[in-house]
Length: 129
Image 1 (cartoon, one colour):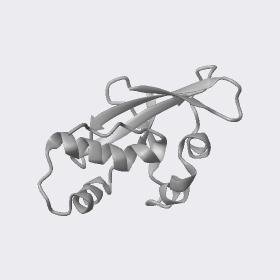
Image 2 (tube, helix red, strand yellow; image 1 turned 120 degrees about the vertical axis):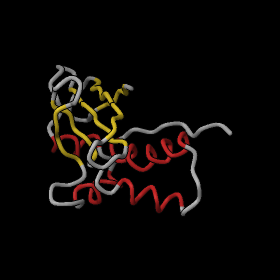
Image 3 (cartoon, helix red, strand yellow; image 1 turned 180 degrees about the vertical axis):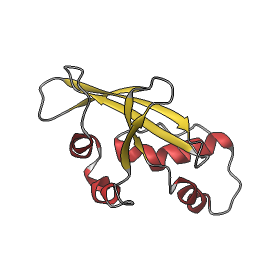
Image 4 (cartoon, one colour; image 1 turned 135 degrees about the vertical axis):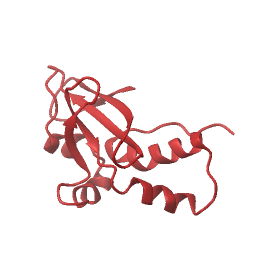
């Protein structure tokens, strides 16, 4: 999935490519993403917080754990470095949102995307009933 963003400090459009992967450790989805400047250079983690993370999420995202909610890892398929939203609290967040009610898999994915995607500028349309 790709989205284009306009970054205030550059006059052209930057791109973000998102991948959803399964964390073998946490057994939950993980949102990996690569943000690239118009000259194809990747954003640094600090630039991610400055230009990609919405203002309403910045403090919360920085204060998660020791290093914050956004880290860098190697993509398991391409081997290239990617940013990712750390999955350590995903299961707990989904449990709280579901309030103990049974949730279908497709609804769970949209719920997860709403929780995790918003902190890095990714929004999905609500599913039609």
